[in-house]
Amino acid sequence: MAKNELLSEIKKAEENAKSVVDQAIDSKNKRISDARAEAREILRQAEIDSHKAAQDSFKAGDEKILEEKNHIVNDGEQNALAMSQKAQANIDNSVNYLVQEFERAVLNE
Image (cartoon, rainbow, N blue to C red; front, top):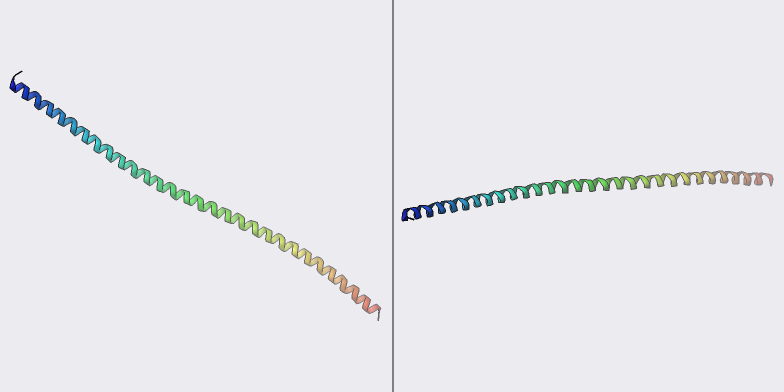
């Protein structure tokens, strides 16, 4: 091979090597850019998911509080009704007792 041909082959090899290195750098930069975009999307989705989970948790808590409130109110209403019935029964017994005592007092005079 002549010196010119050898230098020409070396120059071609250098250009090919530079082209391969440039392509590798471009590919690396694209992968880094894609990875960053994917990371941003993952973070955005995680934020959306965590917000939804928080809302679901609050909703479940509100439902549980409402259920407990209804249970307490129902128990209170049942207790109030039972006390009212007991008080009514005591009134009837008291009236009967007073009538008997009045009759006894009137008859004994």
